[in-house]
Each structure stands twice: as C-alpha cells, then as structure tokens.
Length: 516
Image (cartoon, rainbow, N blue to C red; front, side, top):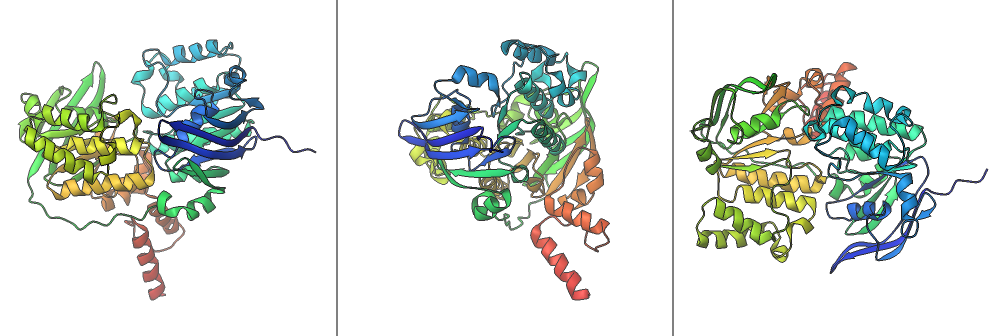
C-alpha cells in the first residue's frame, strides 16, 4: 500500500518585516494523523509560520502546501479544511458561548448539530455556561470554546498557536487529552507551545530559532539537543533578610458580584521584600483579589491595607505606591519602547532629569538600546513582558502586583524574568505574583492557595507542595520532580515529602544509597 502524502509540505519559506528576517528557508513536512509541535524562543518565527500556513499572511519566498492545496492560489479552499486557534483569544467576547459556536458554524456553511459528535466531549464541559458571554469565562473555558469553534466545520488539520497560555495545570491536561482524542479521529494537529511538558506529548517537534529550523525529531532528542535554551538550569538566589514589616494586611476581605461571591472572607499579610505566590485554578478568585488590593475594585466587605493605605478610602494613594502588571499586556503597542517608559514615568510623577537617566539605564539593562525606537507591538512576547515588568517598577514602588506575568513565554525568557523579580525583591520591593507554572511558584517565599474564593492553604513552598493530593483536589499541579518523589514514596521508597528541585532529589537518592 502506497504511503499517504504528507498533509503539510513547507519548502524554503522566507518572510521579512522590513530589515527583520522572521523566517529563513524554512522546510519541513507534517504527516497525516500526527501531533506535530513547533517550539522555540519568543520571536523565533512560530506565529509568522502559523499565519502563512493558515493563509492569513503571504510568504516572501518558498512554497507551502496544506491538505494538498497551495496556500497562495488555493487559499479559499484551505480555509474550509483547517481550524485555527491563534495565540490570543480570538472569539467574540460580547457573544455568548452558544452564539459564538452558531456564528462559526454559519460562517463555514454548516450547523452545530451536523458536527456535534466531533465537539461533544469538549462542548459538554462548557454547555452549562452556554448563555454566558465568552469574555466572562475562565481561561480554561475560553480555550475549550475556541477549540469547539475551530472544530465545528470538521477540519482535516488543526493549527494551534500556544493554545494553553493562561490556563491552569488541570485544564491544560484536559486540553491535551482532547487533542489526543481528536488525533484518534483522524485530525492532524500542528501546535506551538512554550511548555516543555506539552512538547513531550507531540509525536515529533521542530525547534525553530531566529527564523530557522535547527532540528526535527522526537521530543526527547530535541529537548536534549537544545537543552540550554529549552530547559535552562534552575536559578540560584542568595537569601536576603528583610525586617518583618507588613506591607499588605488583609482581614475578612470579600467581593461579591450580585449573588456570586468571588472572594470570600480572606485574611493574610505579606512582609516587605517577600515574594508572595498566589495560586489557584482558573476562576478561583486570584485576579479579583489582586484588583481589590490594587485599588481597582472596591471590596464588598472586610479590611485591607496596602503600603499603609486603606484600600477603601485611600485607593488613589495605593495606586501611587504600587506597580501593577496585568494578565493582558498593559503597555501601549503603538508607542515606541522609549515612549512607553517615559509615559509611565510621567504618570508616576517622576522628574524629567531622573526619567532621562533611568530610561537609558533600563534600556541598557534589558539589552533594548537598539530597539528604543521600535514600536512595542513589534517586540517578541518575552521582550514585551520584561519591558512591562520593568516599567511597573520604574518608580521604585513598595509593592508590585504581577498577574500571570509569564504566560506564553518560553523557558529561557521565564528564567530571565524571574531574575528581574529577584533583583526587585533584593531591593526591598514586595512581589505579589499569580502563576500557573509550579516551577515558578517554588521560587516564592510564601505561597497561598485560593479555591472558589476561599483561602484554603498557606505556607512556604515546601509546606504547600508536599501536600500533593490536596493540591490536586484544588485543580493545581506540583513541580515535576515533586510528583516523581510522590510516586516513588507510594511505591515504598523512603524519600522526603518536601522535595522541590532536581538537586534535592539527587541528594535524597544519594542519602538513600549511603544508608543501604
């Protein structure tokens, strides 16, 4: 029997944006029925490649065939055969769940009923919220809706550009189980991801960097070959002792939206210079709590002080003494890099001479001097995030609030981002951060877990992550090495419950050997 033709054939594709060579002689094939991954640092060219393959962008050179059709001459036919989820949530925020699904079915001249069997397992999880506006869904629910809409016309191939960004660990696992089920139904999947645990679930992955494919192989071989970029070493930090001086004090803080209680009588305090990890599944109440502490949302009841100011009566003073980096990119994309820095510095009331000096220092520290006149929208995601964080602490606030700051960022850039966090904390700035990456959460000094608006766990990372089953109950994961240690203990291996790093695991195993 003759082998089927590949479903995607890319030959020497190139794409330039002015003087920037985004893609350079890219060539690869995707076989029918496989899950093919694209991984690489921010700005490597992944999104440009996706847009070319989905007929949304013209290449400057080379050819690309999708489902036997040319992306240039046969673009109308291709659009009926592919499903596409871009990196940013792409549905209509003001339409309900069912209205979005019906709209996309109509666009592709089909009905929800006709292909319901294909999306049934996915859609059933969000069907109870079918009347809710898409913009009001949690991150995990949004992605399930987007996937349903991308599948409603029964495509031959799915293109997914970082589909689980901002999604909690349990929802990510569910999402990838859905992808495996779709593959079994004959749908080919091409996916990019900055999460290496997800990359390992692909049949093959291609490593792309600086617009070039440097290798295509099994996940294990690619991750080993390019480990320095894709799996950077853990960060070392010398502990800095700060005085015990609370800068956030919360008592019985509550926020209700009508009959719905988003945050339910939470109490805690955070000290100066601490890195405070605030964890919870999508919809747990993290962002709502943070917005109250930032003076952006008025509490329903309870007491809250931030930087010594009452969050009810002195919200404007709170805003002056904090930095805030929202989940969605918060700088002005149509302004240049230096213009964004100066704009926010002016808002914070800094003096002109100080602004000028610190702007040059910041550009040099971030290695963005050559990009000072670049529009922010043209920067890779990781660069944008580092810039946004640096701007949020430009005025040297007492506290900075970071809402999932590294979503969609590659491992090497995440490591660089946390170096900036450590530097800020060492200067006495308190860092309040939410994250879905458990390998980041272990770097915090304190970790609190919120579930359905309730504060259900609090302690050091070792105290929290040693409780594997409890965390799983709340829809959270643990660092991979912690999970391995947990599974080994279940098999009778006498390992400590609070292992967080590879180094600790190696030390524990060596200790076992020395006692046997």
